[in-house]
Image (cartoon, rainbow, N blue to C red):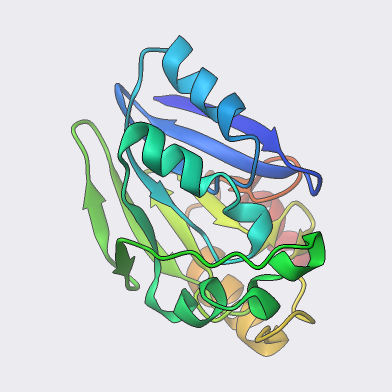
Length: 198
């Protein structure tokens, strides 16, 4: 599998390019031309943009990449309110009022099939109502739900700490211990390592 983590933006968000020949772009938070270069240099075929949630530091590169590669953008249906409201997606903090219109919305358990791999959606509300993780085999892209030795903050608009603990315990920590976790910020971890923290 091709898996490249690209640190983007002032908040240092992890954007992932993942797949084989066909790839998806997960959370293009900024620095769209840097992401573009990775795709072009490796002769990859991007098929879609997936958002783990609707905060600006995970979507600032969407517009450029969507136009450059003619890509659909997907997010959980419960993120519509956040993606369409700068006060909720926090883009007002950088002096902008950005709204993202997705081309499609997914639900918990949906599976997206590509030429050589698939991604399963795990809805993990708490950081935001529509926060979601993407699972392939023993690889998990956890967005801002689960970090190494930590979890996403819940004091932002529409966050819910009780929900995030339920999501982590009920959806993520039940995965095989060897599952590698690639978070929205910081370094990778494993489910086995995180079991000791919850």
